[in-house]
Image 1 (spheres, rainbow, N blue to C red):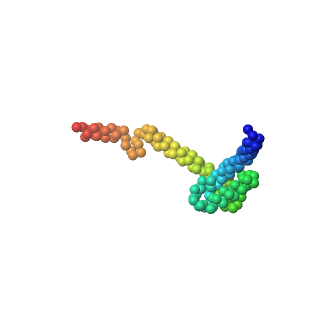
Image 2 (cartoon, one colour; image 1 turned 60 degrees about the vertical axis):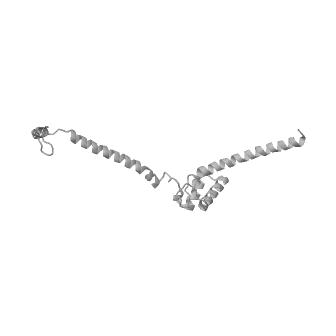
Image 3 (cartoon, one colour; image 1 turned 90 degrees about the vertical axis):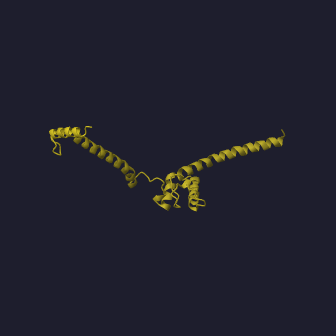
Length: 161
């Protein structure tokens, strides 16, 4: 190999190593931005997560993603980015409401209602079973065992073929 070819190959190697070293932080930033952006809703009214808004030409998601990318590139923490979006768009920007304060009540109430309803159904079923299983000389309708036996004989007599 000639000297110029070796020098060219060496330069390509250096450029390749530098490009891969520079792309690693960029890839990490893109992944971080995608992870953080998945926690926000697109504010164009499509009711989709910010990173999944598929409207053609949606300027809202483009602007929000650009702002998110700039914040991640600056090295802002997730809390700072979240606070910025909440200040700009309000709490409706959350894809999933935070589990604190009044929102915590909204997270817990369905479980409480399910548990309460299950207990109520079990209580009602146990009451019905106890009423069915308790023997009574003359039931709530006043039918005695003798009346019941007389009715059974009559039914048997009338249904004979």
